[in-house]
Amino acid sequence: MNRRLITLAAASAAAVVLAGCGTTEPAATSSASADAKGITLTDANGTEVKLDGPAKKVVGTEWDVVEHLVSLGVQPVGVADVKGYTAWDASAPLTGSPKDIGTRGEPSMDTVASLSPDLIVANTDLPAAAIKQLREIAPVLTIDSADSADQIARMEGNLDLIAEATGTTDKAKELKTAFEAKVAEGKKALTDAGLAGREIAFADGYVVSNQVSIRPYTGGSLIGNVNTALGLKNAWTLEGDKDYGLGATDVEGLSKLGDVEFAYIGNESEGTDPFKDDLAKNSVWKGLPFVKKGNVHQLADGIWMFGGPKSMEAYIDAVVGALTK
Image (cartoon, rainbow, N blue to C red; front, side, top):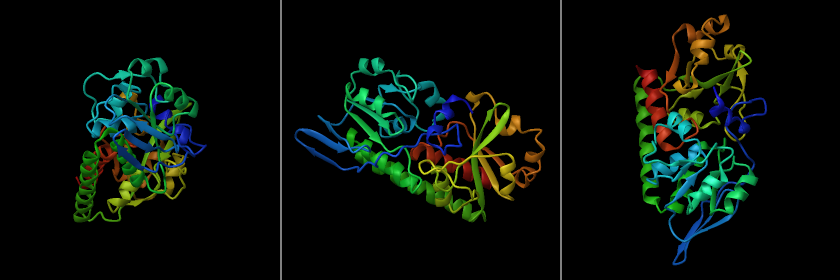
């Protein structure tokens, strides 16, 4: 995987040098009050954020934040790494021409300031120094990036907090209801196909110094939570990091999985597929039970593994379709 996934790894276990970006910031309370003077929210950093009213001109510094905004019907005026978001998150496509504000880890303060936003939404992966600078431009609402204790609850809580800031709480309820319905639909389809309790290992891979490293999505990951909700069993037994629920292993480590379903999401923008390309002649890989049985499933591009309800609905459609075809 390239730099887009590498920027995610700050949050993964120390052994993982590629992946998301966890923090130890306090979780958002998602409490808000509205009166004649506007809206007051408490964000994930415990900061009180005051707005004159529902934010309309919003900047998003991370892709999960951007997906939440777009799903709620709020097209952001500024987005971090527009090209990357477009490639990796097709579930909530951008409309119009939002300004690219730079990378997800280092937004351009001058570019953000030029947009005169009502609100900047970030997650707790963004360095505190950057948050401080952004607060000099406009109110900043931070959401918790992840929580391996309950990723689905964290996802929905983040959606609710952003909805409160943008006056779109009714839309948030619709999104959560649709997601719950999709989970029920997917679970029924898997049960009807005799796949209830089937073991699945979701992972992604990347190449460093000509060696393929595997990043398992354990039961504490968002994908892992969704798989469990679908009635599948997470095949990974190793422990993931406390924020994203991501682990680290290599090709030899896959031999512990046994007869499972193996799924991953690549992306054409990466230019290579470690599982199809780099491991094609690897004897260990070719000897794995799930490889020999043809139970390796590449899911569709454009499903962001750390996204919101829209991404997870797309994931459910993809994984259920792959397992039941």
